[in-house]
Length: 228
Image (cartoon, rainbow, N blue to C red):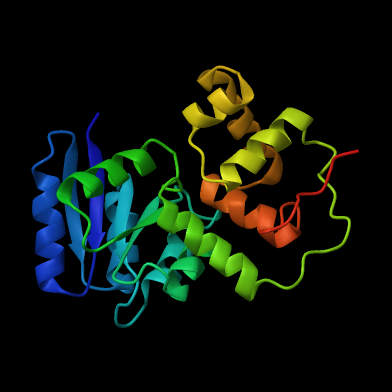
């Protein structure tokens, strides 16, 4: 199955470089290019790409606002967004992740890394494993979130095993690594992740991490609450 990609970046040379990198992949097709957030929304509505590769800082409408529009549940087909950025600890990246982006990549990434990121997000996963993403989210949680509520409880709908999986997702582990940690099959981990997404009404792993931090279920540099 061919992955259809829309590229949004206000710099012509960067758009050309991204497009050239992806066009060389047999399973990826670049279906359009946008010069700003407004055009990204317009083209995404018409072209229905599988993944939108989105720059953050663009004129008229930035990547954060465009991402929020494209990923909101009210959309007929919510888009999957890969943010590309120059600065790995840019607070705009955090806002893009909160807005619904499935991950981000630095602009100096290799063609292979870009193609892999597109494939990961198209498959419904989030680009959460890289240490830079974990550092970014931890930095956000420690500096920008209010103190976690005392005695935050795990929702009754979440099982002990699902909560254990959530804790490992927050640590940045892949499904395979979680399976090893919990001594269960990777297919079982995928099932638990799916249950967490449905029960907590989140659309990918990045959103699960943000939810865990914002609700106080898991506290950076501290112990998570224990389920009764």
